[in-house]
Image (cartoon, rainbow, N blue to C red; front, top):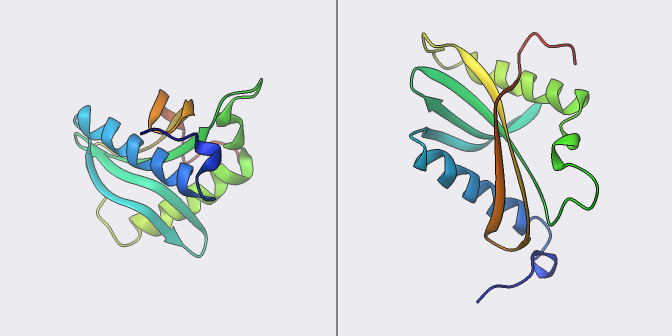
Length: 130
């Protein structure tokens, strides 16, 4: 049975998108470390490893694009909060030899669990201007 995402409780569609994004990454050989990493300075949807690279992933989803791109919501303020949360994470975890990158996963669709997925590796860097 499929129900339209608009009928899901608030936040449920986003949670399902994050689960689907994690499954997508696992299928491509990434190793998921944790999800929904929160600090007082920000949140990272998925933290994973791609070989010897630590990857912080921001997942954005929308029922349909409707003339706008869900990735537009990863603005300078959001990137800064992701950077700060990333700094908090690496302050207590080892940074692998392959370094760190920030990826974005943009998901659009009309019916739950039926997603169009766009993965943008290295979507931005720690030293990019916020």
